[in-house]
Length: 213
Figure 1 (cartoon, rainbow, N blue to C red):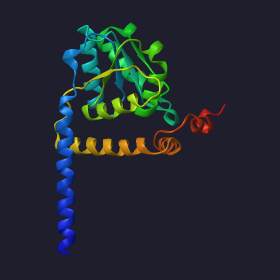
Figure 2: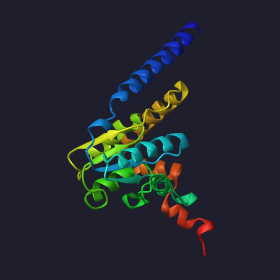
Figure 3: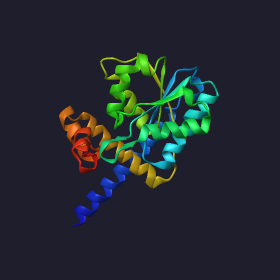
């Protein structure tokens, strides 16, 4: 069984090295210093600590005049009757006192649908230059998805809070991103089926007993 132990050892080692390189590389994606206005697109997360960091980053940029408005996307959970983007928008509005410049997309349930809606409605819902606000690791994926849309603005910037330095949290986030990249690579029908299972769908919510009259 020595070969199995060696295999597991090298597998773990490679995994840790790749995770560290990925995390280290994303430390340089923040473009906060070069901002001069535009719409800050804040991505929902159900991690309270991460959500607070994203909101604080976006609100500080809004107050400093480096962003003109905030637009929160993601977090729609039909089966639970939960609108995550709206909840984050309310927190940002209360904390900044600038509710008139903060809005939310209440239809998107994940990064992919949020970006598709954004690309489709960018001129009306999020006019001006777009600035993605999220976890540094997610920014790379979000920008890649946005640039793959048939209708999108030519450039998009990204900003991210410093992030959690806990090695376990870094490892978890890196592997979450790996899974999200795999999901994005699947056919759209497969994506929808998986997300229906994980996040719920409007059709399922409408058929549930809690929504029957």
